[in-house]
Length: 322
Image (cartoon, rainbow, N blue to C red; front, side):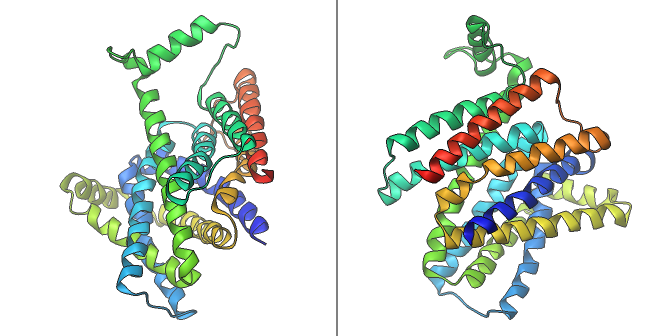
């Protein structure tokens, strides 16, 4: 059951990520504002309590609110990364790192260890993520690759060339969002082990809503949100945003349900199918509606993405069957 739910949620998420990329690139242009809008709508999850009323203890409420707040912080870094590059680069590298971080955190806090097969899967995942995140890779020029790496990440005592600072920010935001996603998933799994699904889900969303309200206490962020609200001229933009948020909420509930039913690392490992959905949707939109989604999908780049996705899918499969 959890397998079908997880795959269905990843299909919906693939479409949501492309829509989020479009909104961030064409409409909103700010990860803080976008995270605020997503967080503020979390209040409507409260109506789910009418179907299954439940009120946590003080300790349970604290953990639930912490999980929701952590998720909002994660969204800020996630939307930053998504805004900085193509969805087909950001989604796979973050998705490849989430199960890795999940296993590491499980080892540190739950005492779980990695088998040789899982370790090999990690190496495959990392290589696949690198292939997707780097625009061009000339495998036969090792020296050129090393020089490019040094230019992007800098020498130990030197600076980073200005041309590659955006790449460093992209890598940093992707890694941080992947780490926070992993921490959130482990925390929410811990919550679901001792609390009812609907009730704990709703109260954790209250933490996200409170986090969105806290954003308003930062003057620059509050000013940006007010200015954005003034620039929203047509109800069509709002309707599209709300429709995407409804789909995102559905996918989020489904993935949380899958986590409550199954193993959190295995659910995360199934993101390989999401990359397949993502590539197919991007190919369709780039061909039919290039003004909506225009990814860098030239022959060499596309081949590299396919190889990277294949490696990630193999690594994720190895984790599932390990």
